Length: 177
Image (cartoon, rainbow, N blue to C red):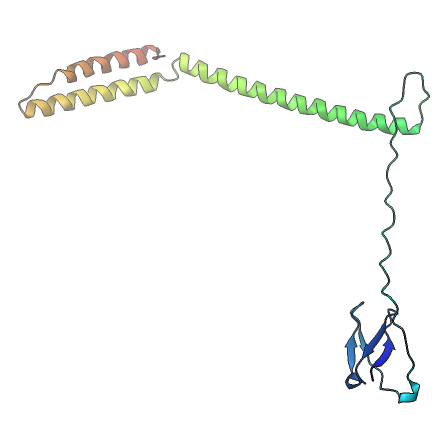
């Protein structure tokens, strides 16, 4: 015959006779409970199991009241002052964000103007001179290799003249646009 006893959480538990004097775990609260010794047959009484209690509903959430915007001529109360503070903070954040965006645009414009100025004022003149010298060296090597193989190419002199023009433009500060 099963042994019936109560858990500290209030739940009535039933276990078999073989668990008398041992420990059992409550399925509701997971507390380990000592199972009492089996009582004589005359001490048994019929116990109806209580239905499981539903957990208590959570406490209601507090919701801030919705305040309609005040109309002209209406009286102001203390809550309006708080709303004004929030609105002022939002306006200040908006202004700061706009100022940051304006500064970013100005920096980008300055960078672009600086790059354009470098290009137009000879910022690339060193590249032009270097490119011209490279063209002249290639032309000389090409011409010498061709003459060593008993061939004459008319492209190396043209390339050499273009290299001279590039070096002259770079030296004078002009760039190819």
